[in-house]
Length: 603
Image (cartoon, rainbow, N blue to C red):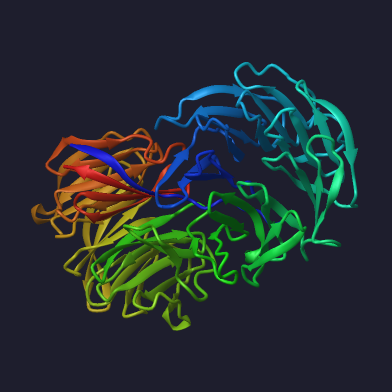
């Protein structure tokens, strides 16, 4: 029994309104990278479904940049740590780690020989540092600023020059190495959010709506792009073309502009929408690809021939995924994932992603399942259960069922049947209507599963017991049958054929009960080091998967607890939040790292 990571549908960048996002590329032009939470995401620029995730930072990562050699990446986090790690191996081995100052690192720059690194940010005693990559020894000082430094870049030809942009409304110019302060210039009463150096050595710096150009060697002012102002809104990022004759700028006015440097005029204006989430906070020119990042986190591939419509838009999640399920549609497998108030769906092969449209839940989606009528049934902390027609993938106000209290989980059965467990309640629904409620339970329900036959419901409680109920028409009747778990129940599921009931608990155990034997215990499964939070049965009914707070995923053989597949660090540094099977050889996992992963299994 073995496994292999098949696909990683990576998270989007983590965005913040009014804050620039660094989108960086590798020297060979094949990949681009950005950050989300504690992760650095590397994606193939031609096929973004090919992705790699680096998760070794203990704190939120702000910026990551490739060394010009392409062999290493330097990434900086909110604590002021810089990690330099290998790009050639899957393990991404750490080469060096430094703490140049205490505080958030906002930008990084390498010299063209990959031997020196400059970092800037929100230091307590200083706002930047320049050091040798392999020893950490200082090769200059970044002084001359009185407030946070937002951006840094280094001229990629000798003699080296370094430039910084700060909240103190100044741009500083340094000569070196060792780098020494030469001068500052301030031509606007606004902070400088971005500086950049071209291959030819021309510097530009950006103040709110203005872009100024300077000679990279002498710091002599050369002019301004666009005359009086380059954009109608704040400019958050610029990126040069490979030959330095053109550049693109990303703005809060929801546009990206393509500039001819020689004439100082905008050749093309890319309009990305009218909503506040369409503000452009980052950009990258990588070979023939022009990319920008919207406040929504969407990554736009810009089309020079059609500025009003991107060639493609990469969509997905930027926040923790809470739950997942799968469904077959027109012969293709589709993955549904719930994050915060949104539900997204993914093509399981291509990774293409869209969100269900319309006004949906107003609070976190907790659980979801697909019924036999091809409806997605979701329960949310907004005290509701929703039914969404998957042929339309659009929310409807008529498909909402209001609960009396907050639902925790939902399970579906045949004939339009669904059962939701809420705080202190078990609720029976049929055909999008609430038909029966069990109250005054004497225990707190936590998980629920409906038998495939549609006649039995199992409810797991915080008291470590599983209670069985019969569905009799539009009512639920307590069978008086109580099963014992090893601890408070966290999840449960009947097998697809209804032969077994799997129950997970806080004591790190999965117990399998055999339905035909009066729910006798078949096997207990041990292996997790922390609380198990999710279960899912394989279509073959002989295997099931469990995921826990320990970042582990196990695939078990129901007949032999010793026959198992252990997937360690399935989502490193993040617990597994959801499991689903595309087929008997492919398992889908989700996590609070905002990634969807597929695992090919040999069982």
